[in-house]
Length: 216
Image (tube, rainbow, N blue to C red; front, side, top):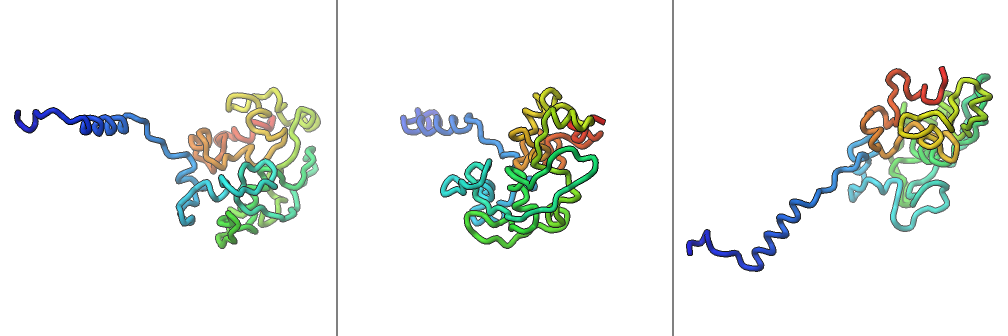
């Protein structure tokens, strides 16, 4: 029998089956955070992405609402936004907002993770809390139907659609509170990736993001 017609051995058949199987198995697609503004893998020795905020072992469990936290947390006390038209009771940033400010106030290095002292600090427009929070949208306040009624120009969060599938309360608030992550998706999930605007979950085109909550 000519060499090209020779039957394959059992081992060769198994190897061929494994190759074909590997080609048929769906390959994992890159996560949305890869290549985004929050992909800092270039400065990690192992080129890891998640490790700047999260770790599977020896996590800081003292940080509230921070799963398996791995990044140093700011201890700064801020001057807060105030206005005669502000009806909400605004407190010091907490929860996810304080975690965001742990890079974005410029006092904690981006690469201060896993117990190491980092050297890369955000500055300029990226250091949102560097000039206090007196000129930024307030965060860490209770946004409920009572606040909407008192203000008169806010949509009721319990009943108003967010545009993301459910209500403002369900999709945008955290324990009923408005936080940085009510508008921003740090992981650049599907909604934010599709918009492509500063990791926002709702586009700013036509002021859609603002008008989701503000009744103007």
